[in-house]
Image (cartoon, rainbow, N blue to C red):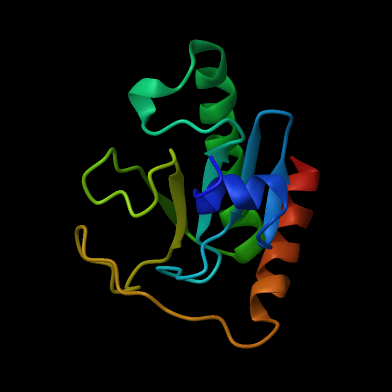
Length: 138
């Protein structure tokens, strides 16, 4: 879809800090992260919500989510991760996307209130590189 920003990222029209690419999926840093290293996983094919995800993509999508959850721990030193997905309600972009947010005890995240942070100049690239290195080891 030409007006979908995630489709534009997948096609390369819009730049993003991509950390994982497969034939079917792309993962990149959220530009408004809850915490630095917050990754979004999307199918290359435009799919609106999880119920719309084709059956042949379910396993690869979840496998990539598992891999990303591991990478935020090993690559960023997080103690764990918060993995979430909205369907329609609170879905800021109507393209299926799964959030993988690095977590540490005492980080201030409470329930579903997501305070947003910003990357300093060049910092997003450094976080993306750490995640790419961790993913290369998986």
